Image 1 (tube, rainbow, N blue to C red):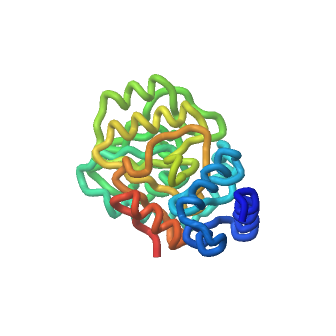
Image 2 (spheres, rainbow, N blue to C red; image 1 turned 90 degrees about the horizontal axis):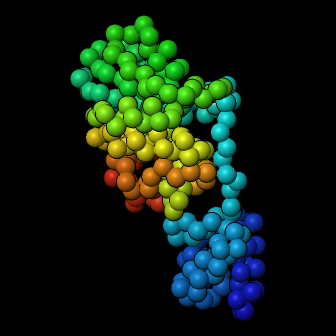
Image 3 (cartoon, one colour; image 1 turned 180 degrees about the horizontal axis):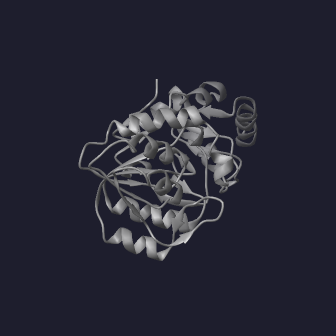
Length: 253
């Protein structure tokens, strides 16, 4: 089979199944794994697929920023599941950094009745949620993102440079096995990077539908964080991929 026919067959498999695995293509095309990898690499350069660990997927559109009202009801049960796992890691006396987002808002709601905790956040909705609690709450200063409620910019980044916390619960717009943890804008990625630097341990808190997706700006490599907390809808294939990249992945079946 010629290289052109091989690539055509690979793309047909992608369209039919949404993803391909190298070992399956070896059997299907009757060529070596090295040849399959070379074909996949060339197709990725042509932007016809996205290489993954052990195979490839159909290119996904870049995920754009959405308003708070659009995000709050999406995957609510999964966010609750993630939040309950996250709060089990919180011990008395901890200093906790909560990234902006609706999943971290669920974490804040479950910490609201606790005492002897310090919460640092760049989310005005999280700060408002905790206003009647007995927790010490520190809201980062800076520019407030309209329709979202996240605070970002140079002032917030400077505050983060001057603090150190025990644990960060980090949000993201997308997570990709080769491209890393991603945000919708450079500005949002910049503050998340500072959050990581300011934290002793970092747990990515995202629902399963955000995996193997792309966003505009990279925050960090997946293997640079402490662990991942996700929900039980994550597929076994993705669990295997990200389980190899993280020292801690919890919430899956």
